[in-house]
Length: 102
Image (tube, rainbow, N blue to C red; front, top):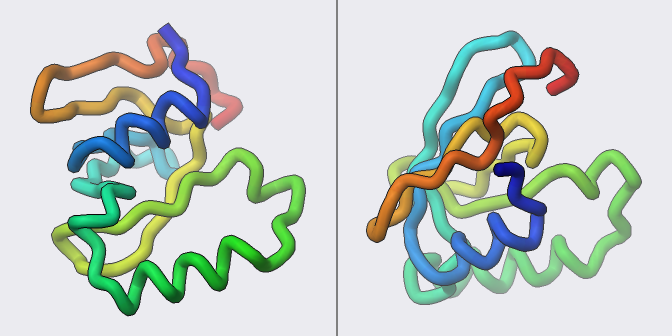
């Protein structure tokens, strides 16, 4: 099952998720992250709001910026590189296709 960008964002807004994705160099990375405002420092929420109001390029439409709770910093990943998502409730496979166009 392949989830849309909006479905992934909805999960991230509800809780902390562990996202597994393939980096451009082919290595697999996992990140514990969220978009739940109660988990993000206030100053970072303000900063993110300002950034979201700036213009986005077409290339940015495939990218989800998230708060990395381990590094306490903003990070991002490409939607089409996500392998699966673990939430507190259960693990969900996001992309079963191992295509090389990530």
